[in-house]
Length: 333
Figure (cartoon, helix red, strand yellow):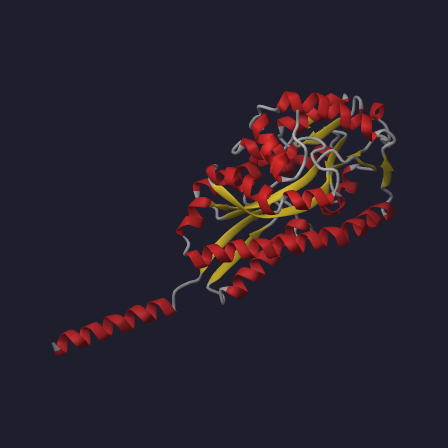
C-alpha cells in the first residue's frame, strides 16, 4: 500500500506538471485584406480579447493579405477543420451556403443603420443557422462600407457612363448579374489578383469601400475615379470551423462568441470614424469622387432584373422573406 501511494503521488505530480507546462491552444486566423484595414481591426481586437480573457491559455495568430491562400481556399480549410478561423467577403461564402447570398442582393439595405440591424439579433441568428449547416459559424460581421465603383477611365454620374466598362467583381453570380443589368462588363477575378489586373488594364475598375481602397493603394493601380453607388454593403464575416468549435469546452466556446461581439463593435466604430478620413485622404491623392444623378434608375434596374433571376440561387423566395421579416422589412412580392 505504501508503494502504491508513492507511485500514485509521483503520477499525480507528473500529471499536474505536464498540465502546467502544456503549450497554449493556438488558433490561426486567415485575413484577406492588409493589416491597416477593417479586417486588421477585427483580427487584433479578437486576438486581444481572447488572449487576455483566457490568461494566455489560448493564442491567436493573424495572417494578413491572403498569406494562407485565397478566401475560397481558406473557407474550404475552415470547413475541413484544418484552419481555425477566416475573415472573408460574404460573396465567397455563397458557394458553400447559398442562403448567405441573400446578403448580396442589390439594394437590400438603404443605409448603415439597416445593415447593423440585420447583423445583430434575429436576422444574424437566422444567417448563422444556415452557416452552421455549411460547416462554420459566424462570430463577427465586419462592416466595410458600400461597394463604391472605381475606374481608370472617367467619372461615372449616370447609368449610361457605366456601359462598356469592365469591372472586377467577386466570384458572385448575384454581383455578376447586377453589373450586366446595368450594361457593364463584370469579370470575376480573385481578390489576390485584383491589384495586378487593374494595373495591367485587364479590367477598368473594381468596387470597394474607402478604407479598403486606401489600404490596397488602388490609386497606384490606375484608379482615378470613385462613384458612390449604394447597391450592396460589403459584409465580411469572421468564421470559425464548426469542427474546431465543437471540440472546445463550453467556456471556450463562449469566449469565442464574446470575442466576436467585441470585435464587431470595434470595427463598426472604426468604420464610422475612419471612412470619411479615408475619403479625404484619397481626394488629397487626386482621386475624383462623384455622386450619382440617377441612382433610382440603377436601383430599379437591379431589383427588377436581379432579384427574380437570382431568387433560387440564394435559397428561394421564402428564405428571402424570412430574412426580410427578421429585419422588420416588408416581404418581397
